[in-house]
Length: 491
Ligand SMILES: Cc1ncc(COP(=O)(O)O)c(C=O)c1O
Image (cartoon, rainbow, N blue to C red; front, side, top):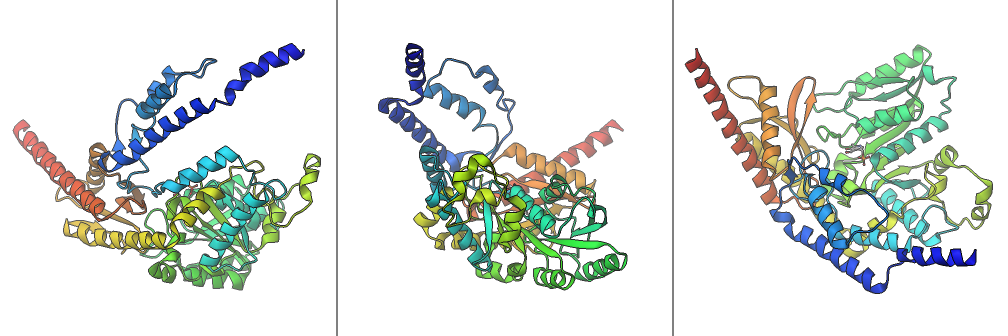
C-alpha cells in the first residue's frame, strides 16, 4: 500500500510546480496581462467576429497538460478577442465597471494564500478586513456603526440577501404571502424581480407604482396605494427604491420614500448597486439624500469603485434580522462557534466557503486612497452632462437631464420609423466597435443609452462616441436616400 501511495504522491506532486516553472508561468502570464493593458487604448471595445470562442472546443480538458504559451494563445484568440471588452474605456453600455489594476493583485494574493473569509474562527484577519470595509461603506452611506452587511459576488446576490432578510423580519410565510404587498417601479433592475421569485415570494402582490416624467416613483400614488391596500386588509411589508436606475440613472425620492415606509411600517430597501458610490461626490451626496434612512441597501464596488467584476455589497441596519435570516449551525462546524469576536460572513449570507473578496477592494483603497475615486466619479458625472449637451447639438432627442451618469437619447429621422432607425444606429456602433453602447425600450420607444462609469472613460472617449454616432447617422441617411432612389427607379 505504501508503495502505491508513494507512486501516487509522485504523480500528484506536479500540482506543486517547481519554482522555475512557477516563475515561468508567472512571467508569461504577467507579460500577457501587461500587453493586454498596453494595447487597450488602441483596441476595439466591441469585436463582432465569427469566432465567438469556438476554438476552445478544439482544446478539451484531458489527462495530459499543454504549455503556458499554448494556454495563453487559446485565451487570447477565443476569450479576450471576441465580444465586449469591459476593461476598455470605450465601454459605455449597460453598467460598465473597469478593472483597476490592484484588484488583480488582491485576487492574486487571495488565491495564493487562500485565506478563508467565511468564519472568524478560521480567518480572523480576513473576516475583520471584510467587516472593516463594510463599516467604511456604512459610514459613507450614512448608516450607523452598528449596521452590518455582506460582500457578495455582485448586486444581484446583495439584493437577494436584503429581500430574504426583509421577508423573514416581517414574518412573511406561506400563510400570508398571497396577502402581502411589495411596492416598486417598473424601473427596478430585473435582479430585484428575480430575487423576489427566488426567495419564494412569487405569489406575493408586486405593485408597480407609476413613475413621473423623470422616471422616479410617484409619491402621491404610493401613499394612496398603501392606504388602499391596508383598508382592503392587505399586508404591505416592503418598499423598494432605486438610487440610479439602469435604464436612465434616475434616483427615486428616497427621503419621502423613507418617511412613507416609516409611517406605514414597511421595510425600505434601496438598490444603489449602480449609483451608490456617487455619494463620494458633492453632487452625488445631494442626489442620494435620504438613502441613509433605508433599512437595507445594495452598493456595488465592481461598478462605482471600478473593481473588476466580482464584488457587490449589501448593507443592512438590523444585524439580528440579517443573521436570523441566514444563520445555520451544523455539528461539523462546532469548533468554529467559539471565539466570535466579530460577525462572520457565513452567518450573514448563503455562502460558507467563499472567495476572500475583501482583499480585492482593500488593496486598491489602500494603494490609491479614496481621493482619486472621488475625482473619477465627479469626472463621470460631468462627462455625462457634456454628452447630454453635445448629443443634442447633433440633433438627437434626449430623455431627462442625467441625474447621475446614465442617460437616454434617440435620433428622429425625417423619414421612416424612429425605432428602426435607432436600432440600425446601434448596430452600426457595434459593427464599428471603437465604443460600445447599449439600448433600451421604454413604453414601446427605442432609446439609446450611454452609461459613463468605466474609469478609463475620459473626454476623448466621449468625443469619439459622438463621432461614431454622427458617422452612423450620415451613413444611415445615405442608405435611406439610396433606398428611396432604388424604389423610384424600380417604380
Ligand atoms: C441598479 C442595478 N441593480 C442591480 C444590478 C445587478 O448587479 P450585478 O450585475 O452585480 O449582479 C445592476 C447591474 O447592472 C444594476 O444596474
